Length: 319
Ligand code: PEP
Ligand code: MG
Image 1 (cartoon, helix red, strand yellow):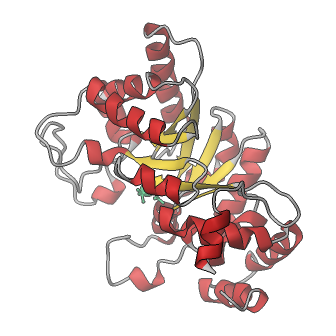
Image 2 (cartoon, protein in one colour):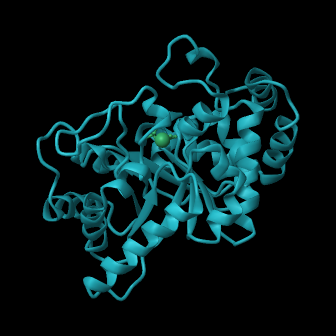
Image 3 (cartoon, helix red, strand yellow):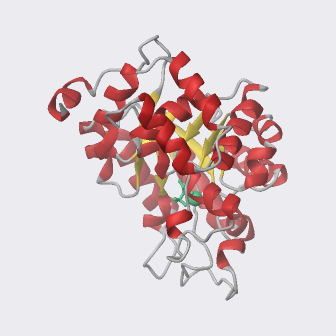
């Protein structure tokens, strides 16, 4: 069956009732782009750019970043490339970015907070992304957004650099939904950007108040917790007010079992690890939106992630 799924992996993904669901790949190294293509990914839904910044003594230059982004864009041959701006935190020190020692780095300077504290680092990265050709293939995704003002500040920097570079075409900007207030305020964020992408790994961590890296709570850190699913539903509701699409790029997007739930909640793009793309697309093709909506509606009323899993498995016993 896996071979059969690979044979159809390069075709567009639609549910059985013809609803378009884009299946993208998460990439963390330039070499991943080729495997994403081989597995039929329809684009890159999350480029984790940290590989460019970690384990070195100086920040990567604009030219160096541009070369890497361009290579990925070329490998993906015109498919969209969602590039996440630098998402380092106090737990991953960088020699050239002096960061304070923090008691709780997960609740401290992370993602966009660091980027806005070091605008020169962010500006260089934004310029590199803006210069990728053809204009329009790249989209910019901002991690750890907790308030509208952060998104506005990044937007202003993008606009300033776009004009300085003499680029006429605007670039799509998205906010990552990883902090619970961002899900609750999704309508306000959607008003200020082009798309939302839910990072369920961090959203789950912050919603359940359970550290992603803590082995004592790892077993209970469940992205299918109905409370987390309600945050996904709230994100979609907010985005719809402004006609914006919602993607999921957290680990849950790679699990077939989550697909009917996320699609039923109104998510239209899943960004998964390249290896699972063929099977995920094949499974989505068997689903109808009515089935997905039904199971999602029921899931929101359940008590636990285990109950949600049992519900999905009772509908699709093969999972
Ligand atoms: C997430 O938090 O779900 C996410 C996609 O980002 P990362 O796993 O890189 O923190
Ligand atoms: Mg994250």
